[in-house]
Image (tube, rainbow, N blue to C red; front, side, top):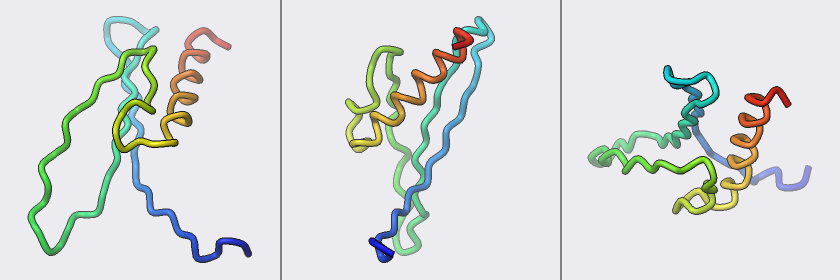
Length: 84
């Protein structure tokens, strides 16, 4: 099997939360989780980054090439709202 020793360790969570003001909008929370370090103090929580509907996840430091995939997810949400 090619790349049998290649292991990706990625833990993340997506939370969709509709706004009470309108059924046409929702929050798309993307949370990256890391294992708790056993040998040192737990790091402070990171700064929350809010993107506008037209902004790409790729502009956020640390997201890298996965930004384009998350952009597709938000485009799919818009399509679902319009009922495809």
